[in-house]
Length: 153
Image (cartoon, rainbow, N blue to C red):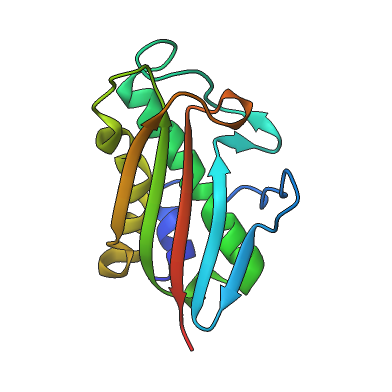
């Protein structure tokens, strides 16, 4: 099964690739690596999750927010390469959680992105990762996810 058919089997559809919100590009390719700018949890310009985990959001809704972020990153990958079939593996996920000071469950939130990537890419979706809590994110997003992927030659 291809990554896109796996997404469909999960009942998911990639959103339109989000445009850059500043003086940067959504992806940069060097050799077989594609560096993806951070993506927040917005679909078609509308935020799906805002606020801090531990205040306006729960660990579960944060998980859902991280999943939206991962879908946006995949949309940027498809826009850059033409197809998710070009992904050889997910190398690293850097996840940021908008959370209250002292919040210690960032890994559980960023699992929303990690679980999706493994569901879509299988073994090639397993990756190195950082999951950190921060005091704020752009547009008050609940989560932000940044990826580095290896592309097929």
